Amino acid sequence: MTTLDRITPIRELPIESKRVFIRVDFNVPLEDGKITDDARIASALPTIKHAASRGARVILASHMGRPKKGPEESLSLAPCGERLSELLGMDIPMPEDCVGDAAKKVVYDLRGGQVCLLENLRFHAEEEKDDETFAAQLAALCDVYVDDAFGAVHRAHASVHALPKMMKERGCGFLLETEIAALGKMITAPEKPFVAVLGGAKVSDKIAVLDSLLEKVDALVIGGAMANTFLAAKGVNMKASKIEEDKLPLARTIMEKAQAKKVELLLPLDVVVAGSIAAESGTVVGLGEIADHMMALDVGPKSLEAFGKLFAKAKSIFWNGPMGLFEKAPFANGTFTVARMLADADAFTVIGGGDSAAAVKEAGPEVAAKMKHISTGGGASLELIEGKKLPGIEVLRR
Image (cartoon, rainbow, N blue to C red; front, side, top):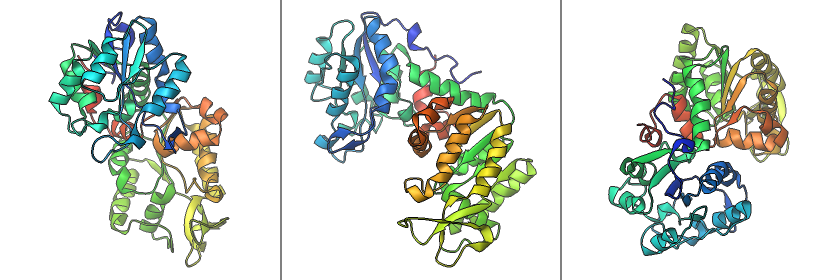
């Protein structure tokens, strides 16, 4: 059974002349009311254009940020509506709310092929509570439900869970279909050898995915600050490096499991150290050479060489989490080098969203273009790799 089993793609849904509610993920970064990265809007365009081209009356809905209590002007979806209007070359009417009379008027005035965008769903606390009464108000606006918001499917919220349960005609958009297919391949039938690369700050964030991957992979590469905890668990004095002291026993257990399952577990062989995260340069040292008051902030060249040899042999690679503090130039080399190596690898490469996806884009458009799949949802991709059933996906199944 594939992970797309019993989910109807939009191309097979009867949407002509229908009011089609498309749940998108327009939770884009904003600075002074301006969008700094419109990738999430761009990734929804194929589904939106498809629906409009078939004469559907398209209703887009999304969340933005985490409003505290009700509407917040700084979290309005208005900038997304403006950007979408530019990308589609058409007016995108937007009511002042996602439910109620204002929303109904805009939706009922739509003609075939036209698109509107509702205001931030999270301006209503009921959205995050998976409230059925709120979902029913959204259901009153539409005839067909399509989910294309992979970044939100791991949350049982009203627009991704309660609402589709109420809709007879429901399915997935092209983005969600691609995400499920690519990540599903990693879960159900990855080509071997299968290598997973995990980084980021905390072991605690990745416990479940580590456990799950140990059942599937041939090799596991660990970098980032979480590698410090594993190295410390092996007895390396990491000096001032960030370590999760309470996770040392867990790191030892994971290493023992890897050994028992004959999974090659590769940790950094050298690191880039500095006295603080604000340092303007770093120094490459071996694991036994970290000076007092110094902290490991990136992986070194010997580590990258070892990682590269593994990637060259792999047929499937999954990457989630940076190799170091890549937001700071002196400590970005490890993460960007891994991105370039994965781009050049012959393997089916899947980037698991979040910081890894951001790093791939920062490494350059030619690097991003070579990846087989870059996920739009960090949390959702990890939970899917863990083998969890995600509420927003399961509710779409017939």
